[in-house]
Image (tube, rainbow, N blue to C red; front, side, top):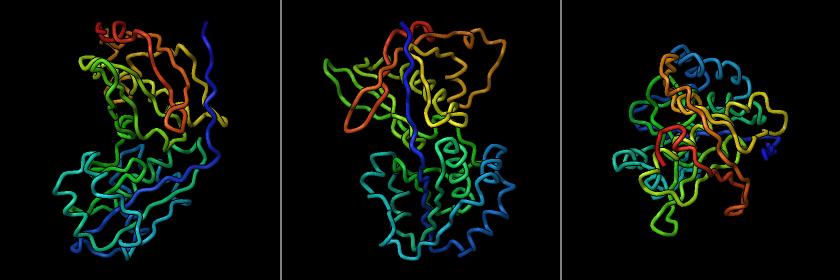
Length: 273
């Protein structure tokens, strides 16, 4: 029998990013730089920045020794290469970007913080996503798809299988998503399912009234998966008409709550599993 999961959201969220500046990067007034460069942004990023600019805080960090710079080892685990770590070590100052928002404004606020950080990042500067933490590429026009907000972590499970779990949805006040004991061959497909459910949750935030409601089983469409990856939707593509039901359980895990997905969605969506 279908059930509805009630996912309470925090009253306030703190959204942050950190830019480490190379010695060759000119010292600029951060507020003026963001305002003057905002025209470079993609429409959604520009709209979010305009919406949040009054509450956005851009703080100079003259002494990086006192700044919350994540350890190099942790950044390396999350994908930072030797060249990026070397540029981190050579940085002489930084700019911290911060914004306090409600859960309903979390998507817009995260877009705005990332957009401002991208505009302040010079060619040899380093942009840090402090939520995970990891290095963010400051390329493009601030376009962000749902999958850009989180990483997928693997951990060994029994029988040579792996658990796969999102890492980054907490930035929106949402529980992370997890699938247990996945065969290696099925990991990419389950990652796509995780991403599609994440898309549904993030999309629900702007209209949430203190909580997000998620049905179990939840109806997951291939269009949700495509949207999560920022893929264009071709109405003539028959694969986008596919849908499936995904079982969802809210469980305690590692001191917090995690949404564990299960069922047989791979066959319905991908003809696999």
